[in-house]
Figure 1 (cartoon, helix red, strand yellow):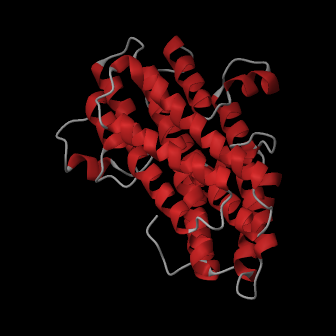
Figure 2 (cartoon, rainbow, N blue to C red):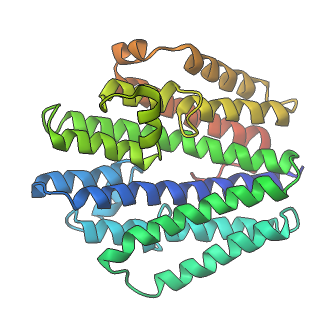
Figure 3 (tube, helix red, strand yellow):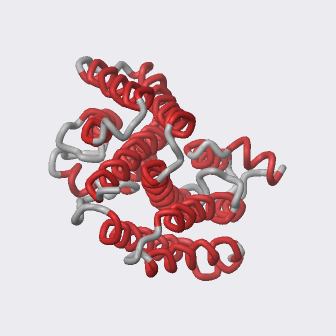
Length: 315
C-alpha cells in the first residue's frame, strides 16, 4: 500500500475517534456541571476538560476566563482549534475524500453525511438543553462509522491502518482522561462524600464503563478499582491493555522491513500491561505511570509515521 494512502486511513480513524473522545469528555463535564457545586469546583472541571487535550494555553489566548459557555464554544465549533469536534470531523472527511477509492460506498456515505450534518449544527447556536443530544449524536456517528468499517471493508492492510489509528488514539485519550480526572478528584473533596462518588461515576461514564464496573466489582466506586479497570482489564474496550494489544496486533499484520523495533516496543508495552498489577502501578504513582505511558504512546505514533506513513504530520 502507498504510504500516502496509509497515512490518510490512519488519520481518518484518529480524527473520528478524537471527535468522539472530545464529545464524551464534554458530555460528562456538562452533566457534572449541573450538580450543586461551588464556582471554583465548576471552573476546575472545565479546566480539566481543556487539560485533557493540552488546550488550556491555546484557549487562554482567546478567552480571558474558563466558563462552560466559552469552553463549549472552543471545543465544539471553533474552526481555529484543530481538536474541536468541528475540525476533527472536517479533517476526517478530508482524509476520507483523499482515499475515496479505497473505502466502500457505505463508509464514504457515513463519513460524508456526518460532516454535512455537522455543518448544519455549526450554523446555529446550540441551546443548553441541546448539548447532551448533540454529544450523543457525535458518539453515535462515530460508532456507526466503526460498524460500517468493520462490516463492509476487506480486512486487509487498509482495514488494519484504520484500526491502528483508532486504538492508538483511544489509548492516548483514556490515559489523559484518567490522569487528569484522577488528579482532579484526589485534589478536590474528601474521599467518601456524595460528590466524590458522583465524580468517580462520571469518570466511568465518560468511557462507557459504569455498568461494566458494577458487573466486574459489585462494590462501591473505589479509586484503585477504577484505575484497575481502565488500565489493565483486558475485556474493557477502552482500557489501556485492550488498546495496546490491538495496536500490537495491527503492527504484526502490517510488518515491513523497517518496523521491527516499533513492533518490539508495542509488544513489550502490551506484555507489561497484561502482567502488571494495580498495586505495582499505584506504588509507582498513578500520575508518573500515566505520564510515562503517554510518552511511550507518542513515541509509538512517531515510529509508525516513520515506518509506514507520510513524513511527520502534527498530532
